[in-house]
Picture 1 (cartoon, rainbow, N blue to C red):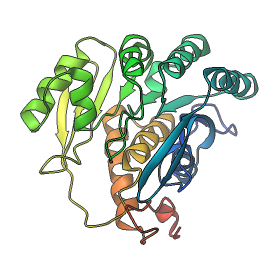
Picture 2: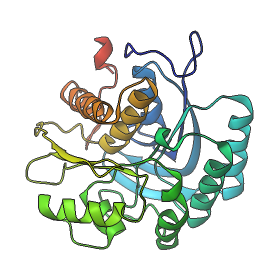
Picture 3: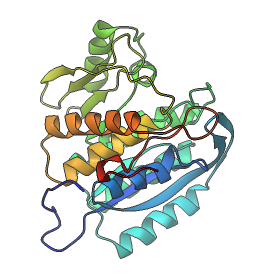
Picture 4: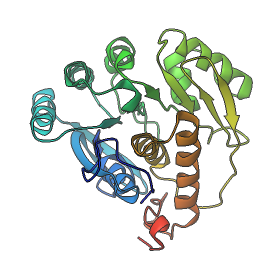
Length: 278
């Protein structure tokens, strides 16, 4: 657990909501988000947007949750819990994007505690958000969030420009952020030659955060873990740059500490901060 005071007040747990898909191998999606929240001492609740058929070896199929079920789940949770922050991952359909946008508009949660990890495709190339959903994500959801954490491929699709190197990352980030003046943007650089991340804050300040390549097969769900760790650290009181650096360090540590699980790209070890294994 990170030693920070609760924004909810002394003695009250911080509650974070994960809105994402379900990965039965528990490397990504809501189960990974909940592991990250727990590792940081944050209580997690979740709303599932899609059921996936997948393992460490890849995604075989996706069954979207109906927008009515998703909306009712969000309403049910909001009636019972004082939700401090929201992490959004896979949404699957245009209708689910709209339900989440409507929920955020009505919930009154500060944008600075809403993190969107734009899950557009699986690493195998399978689409995890419909084309109409991508359009609605840009039109209705991005204005409702304070943080966006795309990888370089996701940034390229959202900004509609090529992203192949550091210069193009900066150009695309500026292009995308120009349409959302209150958006903080972190481009995760795992696909670059040097795995550095690019941070562009809403005020225009930007910097590169150096990374290191970790030799491991435990790479499943790194984007989910980073965005969830970022939200947890923000809720625990870190400033923007401190939260990004802390989330980056958390993911690197969880990758390095992981033992092989499954026959493909395995999960991170989210218990490493507690000196325990999975």
